[in-house]
Length: 296
Length: 271
View (cartoon, helix red, strand yellow):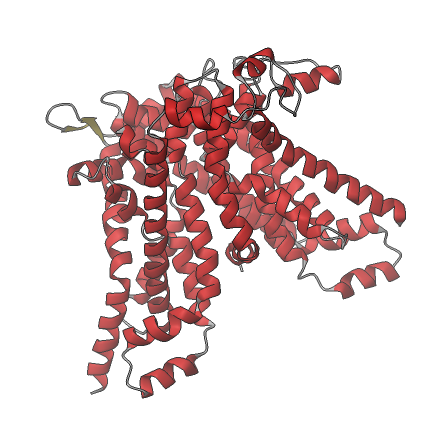
């Protein structure tokens, strides 16, 4: 009787899990194994598909590939600038919003607009603003600052995407900070006040340390998101990664090798694994770093 | 203290302006004539206010309504399937005892760590083999579950009061019957937050449709917009009008469900 009940419960569980297991097997676990296989083969899809074993060639090829180096360099530059900036901006905005001012709700709704809008629409709006004769240059001119050919000049095109994405992602992380800020007990601030702390001291010595776990989460999410930059560079450059490879990111390069050129799908799979390892390494470093810091 | 408050308000207002300007600029451009667009005017108020752009985009590109429908069909189906399937999986993992539970849970956690680029290429080949490229099912089936939300639903059901289910069992309801009739209706707040995120993710997705769909009749809005931009590259009045039309539905949804948004984010935010 007991074991029949257990069997029945297991049956129910697997019935409830069946759609999940189906998708996991067919579109996640299967593909991961398939991707490993692909990364060791030269893939030809034209006519009858052929898979030719090439050992580690696809991986060693990465080291000789100039475009891969450019893409990695662009992506790393992007990550190193965007992640800290958006995290700080999110924290400052959240702390300001949480100060108990009137109209908090209104500001929260306004700030959240970019998060709601699709990357395609946002990129198009910014391309229009970055136009040579566009709004951004007019504003810069007004303040007597130099103007740029944002879309066409290789030295600034990636910066244009950075500015846009900091602007559009920071509010999302702000909301995460906001929720955590509301959990900080008032007694901590009161104690600090008794010790003669001013507003800046309270922010720096109470708020920031208290939010450390949330910051860690925000940074990891930021790392994962920024390493996978694709939509914006694709739309910005019409899929080429131009001008002069300035907006070429690792994911865009993977896309190009996989779907836009012949016979390089296996190589693209190898690049995808390399990217996965880079992301894993970055999040691992972040964790290690923030843990060691908290020992002090 | 008063000075401090003024400073805080200044920060808030300045950033609100920074946030609003791109949207207001896009909105105002969508009411301008091509002449004014080309002239490089930076007035936020159109010189000759016109609604022509909104009419014209549907004439120039008759596929726009089609793209809109494709986006709606895909996003709504993906959202509904996710709600049901993620909850089912989350409930099984939270409440039922069975062999293999730990393994399945660990796999779901591991899936969260794997970047989509690794599976994107093999998925393309698998969908191609199935004949699902350029089809709704190719867009829907691989996206009908989501590891993040399975995890979230599991957390939700772990804290769910057991007494209700026990009462339902005494009344002779089966485990699956209890789940669909008692548990799921009470999970509404968690479902609402999830619905918004899944819908937005699907509605705004660019990469998956870019890979799976090549037939313009099946394009979703982001893809359609991108190809429209390719055709009408200097007609920014059209492009902005189209962008505005397709941002509207999400804004309407946000206006109605805005409190679930905040809840949902703090829920996924590592709690």
